[in-house]
Structures are given as C-alpha cells and as structure tokens.
Length: 72
Image (tube, rainbow, N blue to C red):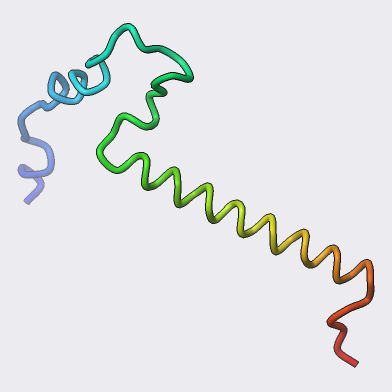
C-alpha cells in the first residue's frame, strides 16, 4: 500500500507544460493561480464566499447601529 503512494511516475514535465504554455503572458494578464484545471472555479467560489461574508458583516453592523433585530 505504501509503495503505491511513493512509487509513481513523475508528472513534473506534464504539469510544467501547462504553466509554460504561453511564456509571453506574465503577471495580471495570465496569473499562475488560474492555470490549473479547476483553479478558476475554486477562486470564484472563494471570492463569492468572501463577498457574502462581508455583506453579512456589514448588514450586522448596520442593524446594530440602528438597534434593529434585537431580542427583547
């Protein structure tokens, strides 16, 4: 069982080919963290969750400042 975890073929060249596919695009035009297969979906989900969290935080601050939603 441990042998299957340790002894596997190297895929470094295959993975490097994806990141080096367009060498003339650098920086903001083609960031490294969006070159993977599912990277765009993961980053979009993280941004949506962050946005929802910030909206709920601002909603809570607004309600506290006006005294709304208190339990008597």
